Length: 191
Image (cartoon, rainbow, N blue to C red):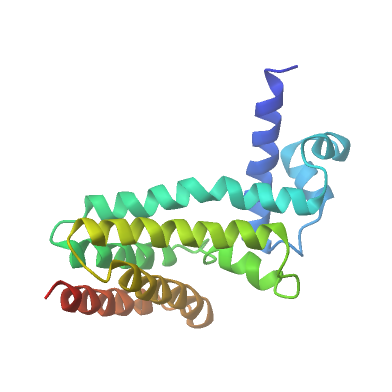
C-alpha cells in the first residue's frame, strides 16, 4: 500500500493540474478530477480532505517547477544581468504563443478566490511570488546592485502585469516589451 500512495497522490495532482489550469478551479469538480485520475472520489478524499486542500496541493505542486523554469531561462541566457532577466520575458512570450497557455496559475487562482483572501491557496500563491522576488533580489545583490529589493519588486510588477495583459489581449509581444522595460530598469540600477 505505501508504494502506491505517492503514485496515487501524484495521479490526483496531475489530473488537478491539467483540469484546474485548463478550466479554472471553480469550473472543475472533485468528481471530474477523480475521473481524470482514474480513481474513485473516496480515494481522492483519502489523499485530500477537501477541494480546498486539493487546490492548495495543485498550487504547491507548481511552485518549485515554475521557479526552476524561470531560473533555467535566466541561467541559459547570454549577456549581462539585464539580458538574463529580459530572457525570462522572452521565454514567457514563447510559452504564451502555445495554444494551451492560459497564463499564471497562481494569479488565475487568486483571481478566482478574490472574495476569499484568507483562503490557504491564496497564501500559497503569495509565497510563490515572494520566493521569485527573493530569488531575483539575490541575483541583483550578487551583481552588486544596492537597491536589489526595490528592483526585484519592480521586475515582479512587470512580470505579473504582463501575465494579466497577455490574458486580456492574447498578445505575447507585451512580454517582450516588458522584458525591454526590465532591461532599462536593471541597466539604470547598475550605473
